[in-house]
Image (cartoon, rainbow, N blue to C red; front, side, top):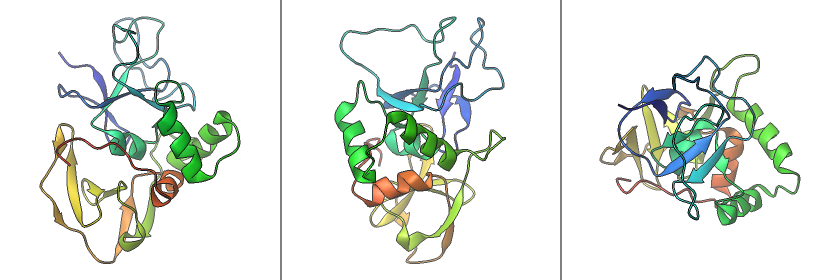
Length: 198
């Protein structure tokens, strides 16, 4: 039976059996019965990790340990507000920092990302509006559903993969799920790892 630990591009957590490409962490969100409480994070270091690192092995949702979250791919993780892990994805973390010209601490980065992804004093995912022709590939937008922007197309996002491509509009305002700071990293050359269906 699936747990409520699959993260959508909107940041919502659902039950879904498909296994994604990445795991993530926002702290301990579950109780001893492996049920999520109302909190959707316990700290601001929302990371995206490899499914396998060295010979480490975890039983998911163990009491007193962080809640393992799972993502279709990195574009979805980024849209939900996560960043690459500095431990198991050091090269990707460095590439993300370089794309942002960030020279501060990881804590500074996490504070800036948190401001970009969450509306203060709520648990709501922050969205913004932009002209679609200004958005880089890897961004996820919202138009009654989540869509991944590629260089030439849009692809509807599902928990288990992407739909066939449809034409990307040449212009027009759209609602953006990927946080503005992360869009900046994508525009400056950070390339997320995508699900094979993309």
